[in-house]
Image (cartoon, rainbow, N blue to C red):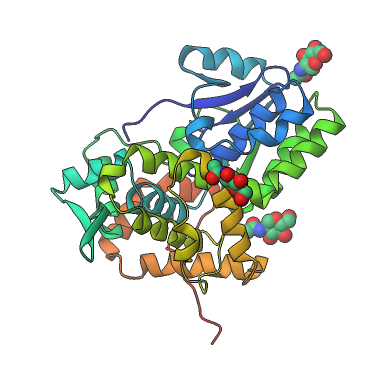
Length: 332
Ligand SMILES: *[C@@H]1O[C@H](CO)[C@@H](O)[C@H](O)[C@H]1NC(C)=O
Ligand SMILES: *[C@@H]1O[C@H](CO)[C@@H](O)[C@H](O)[C@H]1NC(C)=O
Ligand SMILES: *[C@@H]1O[C@H](CO)[C@@H](O)[C@H](O)[C@H]1NC(C)=O
């Protein structure tokens, strides 16, 4: 697959080198490395509030000719992997269902226009099936693939780099905890601050909200009606298990906002307030995510699945993921 070479988050002082693999926990790993490099413990929480547009801006990143040197210097080399099927769905929801450059690219490739909603339009008229076929097309034709779809095994060059720790996105809290346990030169007060920040629900919702605000404000012309965008965003939160899918989109709450970047805190608080009326237990959050994921794959052509099994062959093989799309069995 034609793709960029590996990129790492690096903290020299801690000897920690973490492979950057978008849509597989890299925002959290980036925040973790940055939090380690801050001067004061008081700056830690802010690192976990950075949207992915801010995390992935090149700071604390190493790539290209510098890589060999930092691999030699580092004391701990880590990466995060993820089930390819859930990673692809997550990329689709984030980059194609919502707004941005990638969605516009595929719509142009398929000669599609915008997705119509009643009298309005918002986003791109591309289905999940079409997105998956596009991924296969890029692989088969050696067209450069965006990092959000490149197999993690290739992104992190696992055949040439020896990793000390491989975490799973499915269990990232435990993985990040293990990274911290094995990292050198971390004071206990820094550890406490980081543990608290990493598990903050406020921080995880805020990070998403500010990323979506950023994308929205850069692509407003692709979705002139902000309420449609907010409703779509609400839907993605249900898909991600952040809000109960039984909660309708609270239009009256969102209509107060003009959806500019400085409202990110107030929007986050408003969302968390609404979710309190119908909280999700840990088990139900997992089930809700699985339900959306398995529904997304239910009608995907088997020919597409067979080709994806080839594209992501190494991810399935090396990280022990099932080569079949996830299925959800209703309890009823
Ligand atoms: C930890 O800090 C000391 C200096 O305080 C330094 O000599 C050492 O190389 C550091 N890093 C790592 C990975 O150990
Ligand atoms: C995540 O880690 C916990 C604690 O080790 C373990 O009990 C659980 O089975 C893991 N879950 C997954 C999905 O791997
Ligand atoms: C956020 O909410 C507070 C309290 O309701 C308000 O005073 C403030 O102006 C709001 N901030 C923005 C940016 O809307």
